[in-house]
Image (cartoon, rainbow, N blue to C red; front, side):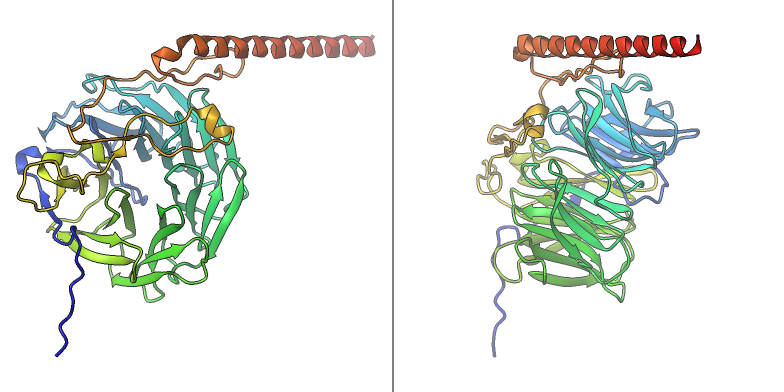
Length: 461
């Protein structure tokens, strides 16, 4: 009789546990919108949740410590004129958040230290360029002030928030609705899934499609795709018989998946969350009452099922805490903020260990809050991985970093990026040069117009 060998893994016994009732966030009117978005974003300081709002779009921002039942008059961020579809915290500034809306605009907001004391209606900058609703916003992982947005006009725009303008436009790349966009580790490429049943690997600065796969999943329902390493992507989708699937692909050869596994027959789109520190991918679907998690390795079958967290109530969306926001002394390796109909419930994923000492194997150096590149460096072709930090002594959120966007009489903005304070002189020199250049252009335009007026007057006489 052959005995089945159980694969050994330090993450085999990871378990999920909801927090106590008094540590939840209660009485929140979570958005009823049917868009396939998480409607929730979280960082070590704040929790943001898209909520129902009359006459426009709004989302709530709460300090993590503000648990329990919320006041009816809780202030919100409410500058959009139509429902908010997606929100994303800036990875390099815990007080800055971007939102995309049905009103075709992207707005970037600065949240005061300590949270909102009154409703916020004025963004730092409004980014306008899409002609249809904006369903996806995601910040660049390593470059400061670079923000990507994807709209239902099938266009991807990449913005330099410091100058308030789009710097890259990908308008002929997708022929239909874009389902998902994800950056790779150093932000040199993006991976997209589209309603035309293709996934694409794109080098955004060159505007070129590096690799493309038609029908990664046979079904007609939405596909999601993320990078899990430099040369591998993971996709979730549906079979022809509407069974949910997860697949791993090698970018060097997209003919056949490295592995394709059927999971269940639920109808919700599976949204993947990947932790590069542990190589664990978590799958949570809208309408599901469970979170499945898998370990991604270099050995067949490459994607190994670990376990799943199950509960009675289904989720309307989920926020995923960055690693620096976790409690390392409790062996917490992931934390989700699960949205219910009227509340948000944190779910803690833990590796059972007896020791209270820092577990080096669970917490390698992880992504910190400092950007590795300026916007200009990235746009100029430079690549760099994230700046890593150690969690040995825990992580203390830093004070708010100011995001500077300066207005300009011509286009509404002077090209300028946000910098650390020790860059002051270089910043002012750069801005002054740009201002003088703009004045020169304006004078040339005025001179040309005067010449044209003179010509027309001569012709009229």
